[in-house]
Length: 59
Image (cartoon, rainbow, N blue to C red):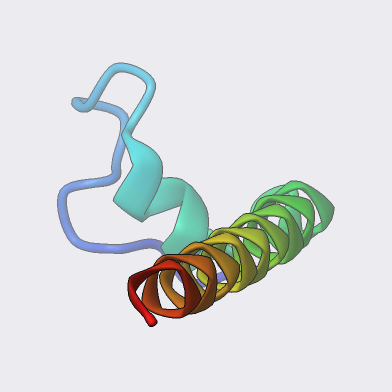
């Protein structure tokens, strides 16, 4: 598997970028991505409803 430069033995534990580049535990990354998309969608819907409610209250 491909290793990023600097991700060798000298780097203790690597980092988030190293994990993403090597494809380690791709299921975890997919789960986090889906969760972020869902949270963003919920936030957008909440803001849209709040703005619509506020604009109707002004009328």
